[in-house]
Length: 499
Image (cartoon, rainbow, N blue to C red; front, side, top):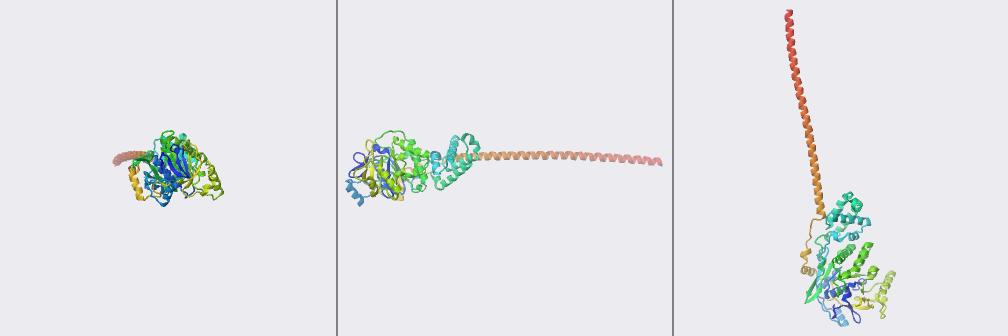
């Protein structure tokens, strides 16, 4: 919630704990073991930013965050918290947009193959360096030949074509191994079985749809954008790669704004450890770059994870606003992590930070926010405020109503098919097939023509021979007849003389 000074009042110890709006884009962390209250803390922060007029994005693993769409209700527990803190919660709904890469629990979020990029594809398919090099060559060839890569069938068609004609591209783009092409094709089939064909394509999601602000009862509220991630989370690498694409797209599209009185946008990255698990060196460098530079574009990134040690030190050091819920110490490794987490806070002489990490109740946290000068405050043991929206999920019908109200159904409801690599290569294949058929037909026609010519020559020779033979037969008969007549005449004359 927002206090009278337009600051984010999110927790209470023996006094209110606030996040300075101009320091909110210095990034943050919500950490804690399962069941310690991270989800409610996330909802409190999202609502507070919305009250400030700042839109935000968050992934919803179980559907619980959808409750921000409805006003909350006063319970005995919340009434007790109101009395304890000396505040009154103003239960209210918040402007909410629901998204789902599968298009089931929200508006579809699609991205083209080309814009998703080689690096993230390599991550979700666990490609080797050699296979990543081949995929990079395929992307480059398609770009040079103006063959758009929109969806999975485009990429499969391009791989098939380039693999069959590898020698043609070898000089300019390097060796393209048929083994690597085959391996990538198999990975694409696996990705398609996981539903990948549903979120690669057009229309591509427009990042600007995240940044809307709505007036409710005359007060501007930032849009809370929720991604239904319960199904997407079943493929952790795809989940982390997709969220990294969203964050990178925001970074690439927003202009530099420098220091602002309040953030332009807040990005909550839940299950953040998935982003860093098995990340390549190139991907880690990309993540660090985005996190380091995106704050100058007015964007704050808040990572949500079970243990802060899951986040690389170079990135953890950039997270100035921390909400640390209870941790568990079941192993020596856990105990070492708790000690490291305790040492990351500025000491408060009122309590033992390391001991407190093990004693925190649900909804209670160790908190340190940046002050007006950007310095981390002394750690405080505090209780989080209660959400003003509903705690827990809304119904399927309420979700449908929210989707209808957003006005995005027409924009993203239907897929768009344009002439891309698949269609271009199909036409090319049909053209080559037609040319081959024409060449074959021409060759066959020439063969038949040659055959007829030879037959005609043989027939002509045969007729000539027949005429000669016929002529010779007539001449012989004539000579024989003449000879016979002459012979008969001579014989008759001889007989006469003898008489």
